[in-house]
Image 1 (spheres, rainbow, N blue to C red):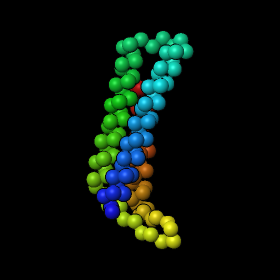
Image 2 (cartoon, helix red, strand yellow; image 1 turned 30 degrees about the vertical axis):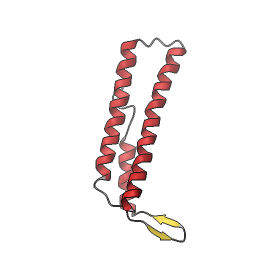
Image 3 (tube, one colour; image 1 turned 120 degrees about the vertical axis):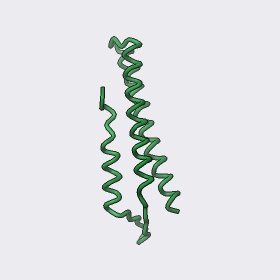
Amino acid sequence: MEHKIKDLTLFQIKRKITNIYKNFFFILEDLSDSGYNLNEETYTKIRKRVLDNANDAIREIEEYFNTIDINLKWKKNLIFIKPFQLKKLFKVIYLFNPYKGL
C-alpha cells in the first residue's frame, strides 16, 4: 500500500507541475496576442527555461520520494502522515520556483 500512496502522490505533483508550465506557455501566447513584441528567439529561450526548471523540479522530487517512507494510520476516518515527512515534502515543493533563471 505504501508504494501506491507514494506513486499517487508523485503522480499528482508531476501533474500539477506540468499544468504550471503549460500555463506559462499560454501566458507567453497571451503576451504575443496583446502586442508584446516577443520574437521567436526570446520565446524559445523562455520556453526552454520553463521546461528545464519544471523537469529539474520533477527529478528532484522523484529523488526525494525514493528516500522517504510514508506510513499512514487510519483513525476515525483521518489519515496521519508523520509531521517531519510532511514538512520535508512541502519544503521540496516550495523550493520549486518556476521564475528562477528568467
